[in-house]
Amino acid sequence: MKNNFAEEYARDMAIHNAYDAARDANDEAGKEKARADHKEFDNDLMLKGNSYCRLYDLYKLARDAGNEYIDFSDVIWDKDVPAKIESLRELGIEKFTFSSTWSSAVETAWLFLQNGCSLEGLVQINSRFNKFMSEERERIPAYLFAVN
Image (cartoon, rainbow, N blue to C red; front, side, top):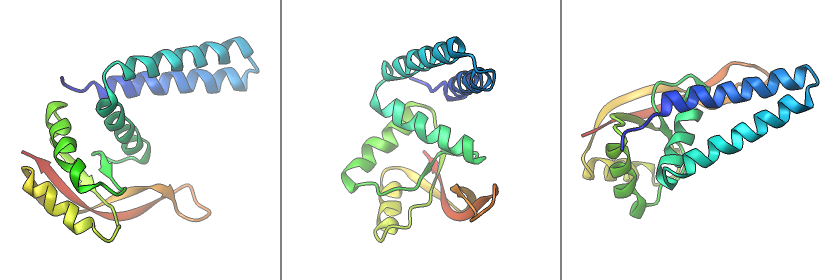
């Protein structure tokens, strides 16, 4: 299965924009329609499986932050690495970043290599978080991996 993340993201954002417009117009029926559309959207995603949904969530976070690639920023358990990499391959995701600062992050990076990824280098990405008292995103370092 290949991913349709870009199209799904556009659909997701259109639903959010419709809700915002309805809210601004004090249009309760419009808000309810947007809620129903979002529930249908979520159900459509769930039909594609948990792995697909999780990777879509990471794609959405990346797009919202202005990043090109999905980013793994949380702890990834060693036992989960092979399945995550296989999911990336199955969905046609060729690159990702890894910005976790947990104490075992370098060991997880090593497991990415062991599971067929290659380290392309270090890059700076936008964090999920804004700078203090600013609309500007924090910039953080991340490993850039290619999925082979």
